Amino acid sequence: MSRLVYDSAHGRMCPRCRKPTAKCRCAEQIAAATRPTGDGIVRVRRELRNGKPVTVVLGLPLRADELAELARKLKQACGSGGTAKDGAVEIQGEHRERVVAALQQAGYTVKLAGG
Ligand SMILES: [Zn+2]
Image (cartoon, rainbow, N blue to C red; front, top):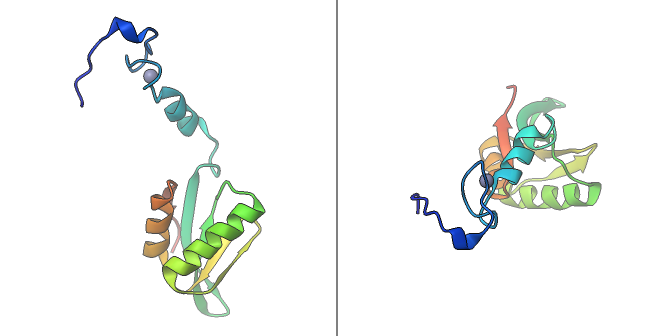
């Protein structure tokens, strides 16, 4: 699959990746690369609430209803409670690895942040 085969029958070719435009993913890659910070890279960090650890997810490019839906999935994945508010999701307890795995599975670019 890695070998590129030129086929003039495909018509327009992308000058960047030299694939037929139908198979070209350059526009997506460029869009992903040029998205401003905080919109595309999701950060997961541990915080303390009243002395108890919570796993906080920041930078989610979601509307409130989408955020609530994601919070529901993350709570399910972690088997824990949590909330969605102010553009962030909080899951009670230490669940960074599960949260990161679930977010990556959903297609997000995830970074662990802070302690
Ligand atoms: Zn391309």
